Image 1 (tube, rainbow, N blue to C red):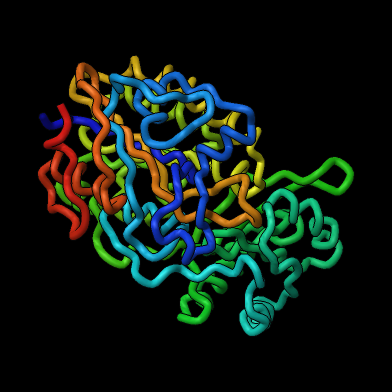
Image 2: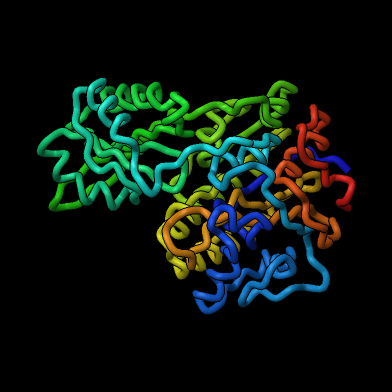
Length: 392
């Protein structure tokens, strides 16, 4: 059958086992969900368990089931990378052959920093991989005294610039980020996103990032299934950072979020509205708050919260709706460092009155794009095979 509405939810970074080529990325043996559950003494995920999660990989506290409620399988990543943009772009049908550059271990090259200082007239401090809240706490007092730019990166292909709104006005920060975006279009410095990270506060009471974040992203290098849906006049509604990841391409409406829980609340609210097409949700806290920070306990609690939110969401699904839950890469909190890990990702496909089953592994995340395209009758991506004929 075909579905009027599809809800696609990305559990950002929740991988489920090392890919065959993981050793090439330094990730042999990684398994985000298996290792976080073991490190945390088990995890309780009754909804995802009923979907067949424990049938895909060993998860402490989530045994396999004989009759899964969803169609469940693992997807391998075809693209050459393990970052957010690569994963999401492949989910929507693109294969990235040349990975986005990251500067996690070294910081940005001195030549780039000198160019940025020359073009903006401000000095740069930081220039390392860091948590945004931690580097602002570390360097915020310095910036308030000097007006220097706080530049940092992460495991993703991203250059982030933090500035106190009372020290560097928003318009200037946005101009600085525009300059950085132009500089980082050069092949040797190309990053996927430049992000303005404004904040307020003081050393005594602490600093807090404001909602005035702005992303300067690269657009996908070719049309995605999102573009095909929008061109065919379907609704394509993003929740969370999906709009930023695709630089707005193919998005017809957008809802920002402040947490995983807020993302699920907004997705649930959308289920009670009338539309025809796709809701595409990213839940980034798994990755940003727990994976990169190597916090297995926090990760476990976030997974359990998501499972409860999923239980609240399911009654809002109508006949003619399809729910797809997946991930975009791994981020094993038991691995050294703070980088993503090269892993399979789970995919669960659930609809009311549909019988579940365990399906064979698929060789690309683009199986999702192919399924969505097949469902709505738009042009299929170059990669991936639709799973629609296997449902029912």
